[in-house]
Length: 297
Image (cartoon, helix red, strand yellow):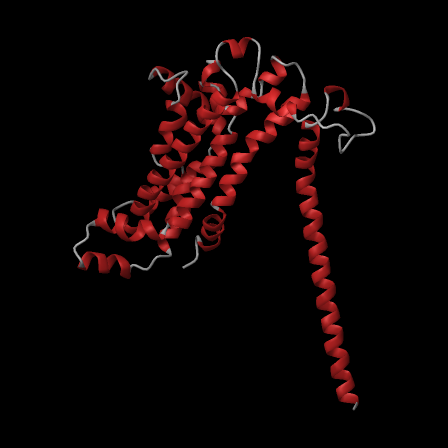
């Protein structure tokens, strides 16, 4: 009886500990979620306020009379820019061109280079791969000015070429590393089976390995799209015409042209954040799978 009672007390205490642990984990997750979502809620709340109530004290979290027309006013920039036929629709089209082109270029070029580092055997392969990874330690500020001079001498200033062409020239060291590590998880027996069937390296890459690395390609594609959608510095350096502005540069109009109308600025910022969220939700399955499986054999 005593041993039975001790066992029952042990299991009840163990279940109690597990229950408390589970509740603590849920509380931490809820607190973290609220912390992450609070700025988004504040941005949405500010987008529905009048200019006079943005900095009201105490803060107004839920406007009594939400101004939904702020989204329309923010999207249709009037004044001198509209007379030139430029608004956020133009900025959106420009950003889509740059972001989609970069995502496609990064997926293609990084897959090709990663295949060479993962599957081909040639002298100096490992040294070249280490040099490729070493470029991650070079700050962007070091190469920014030489790169700008190069593109300006090519006559690419105030064009989209400096923002798109580099994506097709390797895809970046991090993306190459990510896809290469994914290729390393695929058994070499598949390559040998392809060679027996008469496939060349190009056939093995295109017909066998490329379909299997969709998670890794989706991951680098999402990374590239989000980065270029939110990129401010590179368009600021290479784009000079307002008609070629991206969305991030277009937001600066609310500081110069509109003054400091933060309600319209928050409305525009909220709208341009929606496509990034949609892209992540669409590629969420491949994205998580690519992160979880990369680097494991």
